[in-house]
Image (cartoon, rainbow, N blue to C red; front, side):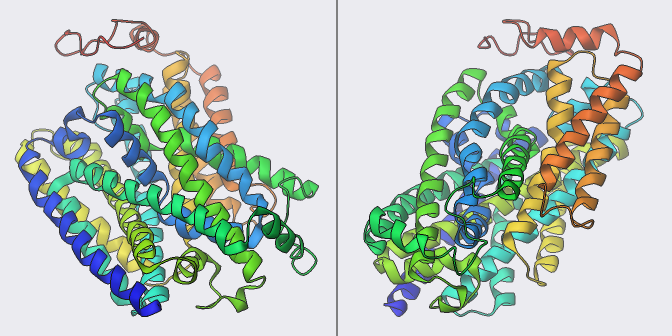
Length: 513
């Protein structure tokens, strides 16, 4: 059966990778301007937007990191699953999506640093540089995490050499991203997201069948805590679990979702704010299915194999979903899910490549170094920078590591933008100095938290997020208020038919509410 699964997946991946490259070649003809490359011409509809949204936020972190975390700790994973499937998503679309889309049109902005520099009236370019450093560091870390995930999938499932696996997959996603930019990423992510949803539905069904139903699954799981206290049967198992869980809920499930620049560019790329409202409901539906299947399958594997050394294909807990499909599903279903997982991993890496590229080309090169560069040159530069960032992430991934924690660092670091974006677009009094203090303070906290050994008590994203919000508010109150036109601009994006392009004065979006 394993040979059948391997053959099915190899065929699936060859066909799929050919499709990815085909999409990249096809979408090349639409890449005429930097806005086309970075925002797909602001043309995304609700279904494409919802799938690219979910595929960017999940993939390797979900299929390997979260699955391994659930296998290891049991129901502690509920603390990140619930907000990441429902509450955090709804807050993103309620609090951030529409206002940043409106303001990005008002400021003619292509990236989050563009928005922040305009909102915080920063002529010194300090905010742009600080933002660029944070996004660039996080993008490389996240690409690194996705490539580690790819290497683990190929080496565990097919027995391929780890190094060869990440090099092959890395070259493929770099090529199609370089060719088609953000539009290629979004269309490939719709395909990948569809496969992941189908696979997760199958995972939940097979998990219940594999474990003999919920009753037998519960009985078998109840026998694990006596031999492994780290595995808990409730997210309220003890005070330390509750404290860590609440900070995980707020930090990873709320702050980090709200602050993602990779998700904000998707809001900015939407056809209209009406598109965003529809997208929110679709995204919650997709996220709930994705978590449901992975969570049940990871628990079923723990019930069947109580200790990691009993796992049939090695004791790496982050590979439990891969191993689950090799023993619990027909090769065709295994091929669909595992092929989709690999594809989604690469799609997330591609999204982060675009994020890192936008930081260098738009936020540094175009805005500071060469403001008069032609659109053709900017698109060419984007492709070159995409290749460079991909190679850096690939080089780092050769060391291996934990997909969960590498991805968490990249994801939570990007989440620091929640403070300047939310406060900046909802609170007219937020100042330039407050923004800088919040970003720098939050970033330093993120870097030092784990080094100080505090991450086992309070989750890093919560601590860094609190620092970022606190510094932004306090320093803003202690410094001179923003110019009146900036405060008026912030207020205007909350009212219907008030969205105008500063340069032309024309109404850009009459669909707001």
